[in-house]
Length: 86
Figure 1 (cartoon, rainbow, N blue to C red):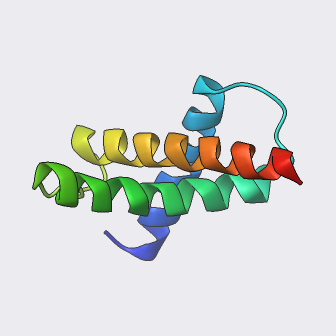
Figure 2: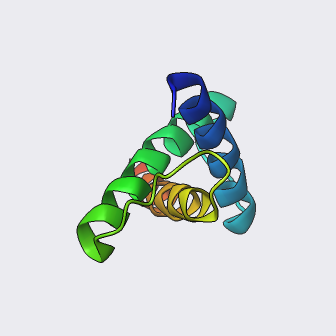
């Protein structure tokens, strides 16, 4: 996948993760996008390390979206945990 596809996937995964985990976040749209992009990368990496599968097959593959959303969800939870401590 190209960089534009990663940005779009990350943006959508970040939005979906935020919808699954509602609440007030210290960050806005840009932070959600960054969390989504990094979460998509994290989810793909965790899929390879833990399950031994190539979870980043393509933009329209279900495994890619699940990995991106799970990674974004994990990152959003960590972000909320550390942002509240400040």
